[in-house]
Length: 547
Image (cartoon, rainbow, N blue to C red; front, side, top):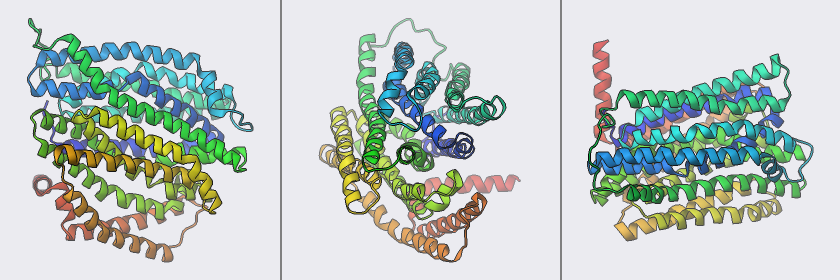
């Protein structure tokens, strides 16, 4: 199978992830309408805990497999590469079963930890039931993830990306259809309806695993999986297993720390809002809006960084293995520039149009609108953190991964409650404090990482600074256009359709104004590269002639 370049892999993965995230956003509209606020909160509790245990059950091994497969493939150690893949499956098989058993048995205790003394909403029994329903997915996803990592290690990104699209289609279908049938036809209680919805993760995982397995079997020859090696490469099994865990540990610590923090953040918001006098329904709404429902909207922004990661890791590992540090620097700068150029205007645009966006997904709600207007900026800084973190992992600076990532998370966690209380005293909505704490935490991590890279590998950031300065003009133009149109274009927030038309018109014209100015300034060619732009033009002209 043909390897994809960094830009090609970025485009493939990003488009696939956009499809995935758009589906993930759109399904929220009918699902939220079916289960309501209380059902949505119950769904969020189950998925946040599931996310934590999924990180534990995979323990960063898929990323380690991807990195190690790429390393051995670059060095032409084919037999060691195959052993790496097999060891990854064995390790994850054992850990996933243990994780499933723990989550299933201790679901009631986890439910009690989440809700505490909160009454008037979902019960501990409700939370326990839906957690057990989603726990079955832990038996599938570790194997699916390590197989995707094997493909990514060969810089074959499209199989992994397409499998994620298939998984999401199946999951969304079963969430919407399953919850509707359970509630409207079978007349089941809300708890069972949400249970059916979260179980869709297991079904989707099975379908996606069948797809990647079929692709792997079909292309055994390309990956040298069809050969039987009489002699092992000069790499011991002990060394392979040791490297798997060495490469996995940073991802484990960072991912688990973030999952733990997301759950702690949800609990801190619950407790703080309760302390400030909000009633139980408002408390649940604010906490789940920050932890889950705003994320469903803003996930299109984090998709940009996620789309870059498979190709970025593979390209950086290959360059670092060959000791081409300038190329590592170039890839880091390019990833940061793409994030700034694409996601910053998206954040600003969604913030300016937060009323229409929230109305389309959940119905008009001033509280939800205000939360979204602030929360939408956190993903921009989260993307920068992701790029920085994976760069450190790709060049084996594991100690700095721990220091930078955990340091940033601790800053975030320690500032959560103080910022919420301070904002309340200042007359600013207290829930803004949680998002502001996240932004500070991400920023600290990124700044420290960039200083370390400059000191250790003489990284230069001139292109990043140039991109930031250049983006100010098209960004300012877009803001002016959007604000002007908001003054003259009428909208009825009681109507989702009216809000959709309003959003579509303003967003389209605002985006066009941004990209036209950026194109005139040469930013588009600078970010994507002249060769890539010419390649796209050639393909378009060729297809046009064929038609």
